[in-house]
Length: 215
Image 1 (tube, rainbow, N blue to C red):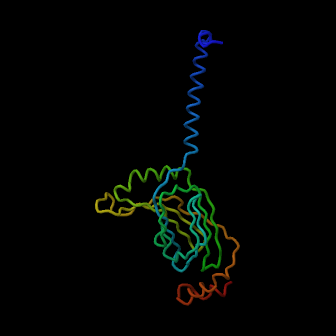
Image 2 (tube, helix red, strand yellow; image 1 turned 60 degrees about the vertical axis):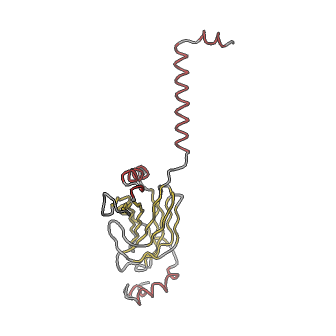
């Protein structure tokens, strides 16, 4: 069939159908591009702390989404506040916002291993994007993910923003809760691997001697 004959046979309904098909294909293209494009990346840091005083912990493993893994390290007994404070800091460059949070840690006071594995809020990336708009790095604002682990099996996650330059609208750090309190599960583990570290903390007076005798 020639093109002229095909056009002559087309009625209004055919035209509408073709337009709908074209719009649908365009929408599918945009949807697919948005779904499979690389996730946005943000420059931020990760800080880890433990507590409260008298309940030091050793974080064996932290996994945030598919991009951040931080293994091993004592995070002390700084505090158990909202938000978490103190502890070690890991600088990250161009990292997506995590969708999940996994952590495993050892409580010296309780001689117990804890494990947390949860999904983070679905709108977290959207919230982080807005925080970067409100507090851009171009104005010397710094961003940090704060993770806190307690010696009795609880965990907290916050987002912190502070200004590192001389011309800032905000003089004090700003904090935004992500997970106010998550309850971890007790899991199996070899507490004997931490016997010497536990004894050292007892000798320093940071924990009662009954910790070892209670095993």
